[in-house]
Length: 114
Image (cartoon, rainbow, N blue to C red; front, side, top):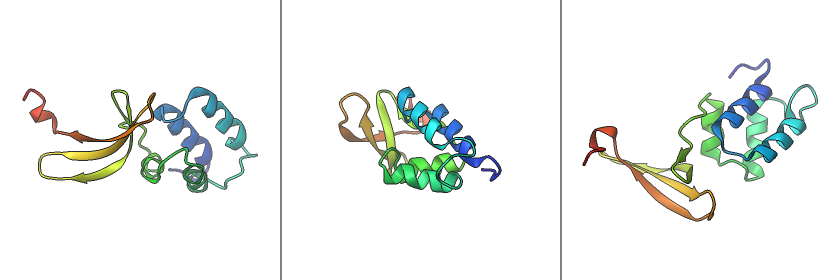
C-alpha cells in the first residue's frame, strides 16, 4: 500500500471487504480517517484492529497486501487458513449469524462438478 494516504486506503479496502458491519465501519472511519487518525499508517491501524479483535491477523495482512476479496464463503466469514494439501485448502471460518466456528475445505474449481 502507498504510505501517503495509507490509513484511508486501508479503511477503503476494509469497507470493500465486507468484514465489518456498516455501522462499525462508520465508527472506524470517524475514528481513524484523515489527519486526525490515531494510528500512524495502515500497519498501525491493522495492528490496532487485530488487538481489538475486529480482524484476525490473516485478514489484516491480506488487506495490507491490497486484497479485499475472498473473505466470505456463503454465510461464513473466513478467519484464516488452517492448511493445504495437493487437492484442497482448509480454512477456519465463522458463521456470520450464529457465530459458530468451523473448518471449511475448499477444492480447486476443476473438481466443482464432482
